[in-house]
Image (tube, rainbow, N blue to C red):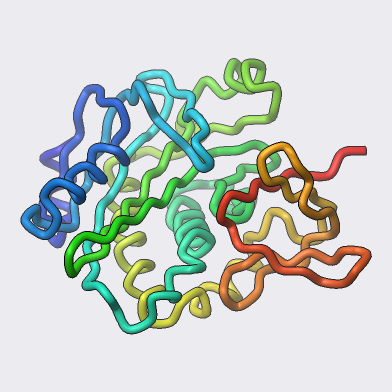
Length: 262
């Protein structure tokens, strides 16, 4: 897989796919912190198994070798760039762009949506999760984007987690092509976001907005911050909900979102 990715992603400084590692995001972030601009970027690192895979808010990404597609890409930006706030909506921008990329490889693409900020949903099951981390070192900002995508075994995982989980189930023929497509998409999305923030993705996100029109709860740790009906995203990528006190907007940060249950 490494050789094929290096051929497909000639604009990347290096692409590697290993048998096992703790976390591809952590490995690339360590490279950014320790070597900074001395390491060549962009970098792609994938693994057949992650022993310490992680998701948003410190959650563990459950994976079994051969049943999930797991990889990360690291990018270098000059710092400070023209608009330091431009990446505020990067999470939903990457989520939407990833959904579009996967949809182009998937027969049932109409069922693929994004649960804000960047969970990938197939029907009502979580298909994949995206983790974005950043670090500033000297005159560079490093952005690490990681994806865990379920390929199979979602029935067992649904029982284990007590929630609906989805998987591609051989819906994609060429996984190397999918990885390369996502890597290019993330690279393009990051640079578009630096130039124009979330605006280029705002209208498109509406077509794949899993939460739109649903009654939801926003959580911070164990506390409900707000409840209401999701009514799309603001132009900066923040989530808007209609509450009893009017429409309120929330940035991703440490917030988690769930469908409201009585």
